[in-house]
Length: 125
Length: 131
Image (tube, rainbow over all chains, first blue to last red; front, side, top):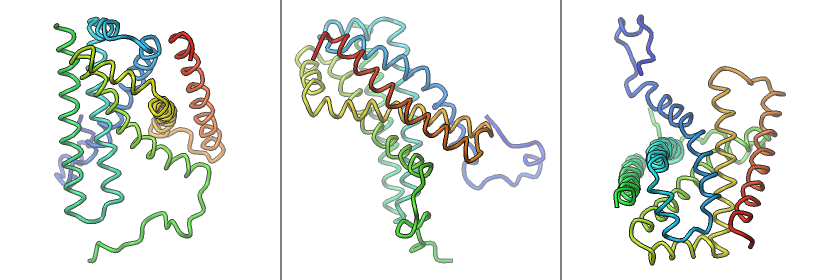
């Protein structure tokens, strides 16, 4: 979403970096996570202590599969955005700061894709 | 212009914490904790995909004393971050900035997080069928 005013676009003097993108994505994912987290917690309370068969049955139900994937995607986008800000705020050695941000984003993509793959593998098995 | 060696804001040695600033830093701390706690969800899902043996290992870990303490900390962090996150979204909408309102909403968040954590654990144990 472009949050710049028409005048600002015409002047062509925008942010040197990514402008409001980070802020906006953080809020969008926060909004999405409100219902997703409530659904997830209630579901986890219901499947507490489940054996493998019961867990597989829960995960492979179509609606649960879709909501789990949405939860994973929104969580990892939101989490890596948050951790990036924390690193930018407190790590003042440039190479370490950039290195940690790359590591966080890489880990979020790897773990996010692995989790989505696990859900799909269970659902289609 | 030198950009390194600048003082941290707030200056921690002379800064007097207030209720609202403590809640603010707690939002960050719970956020970091939740990022780490997400590893448990990743492990749980991958183990469920891998098979019963791997899945039992996760369930045994979650059911252990250490697992339950981590899960308790994680559930409180989740509720705190969720409630305070909603408080932040209200601020983003430009509302609730009066000092008295900020204090009241802060207390509401703390109480809500504690109450929701207790309710969840009572419901969890009831669903599990005891301790």
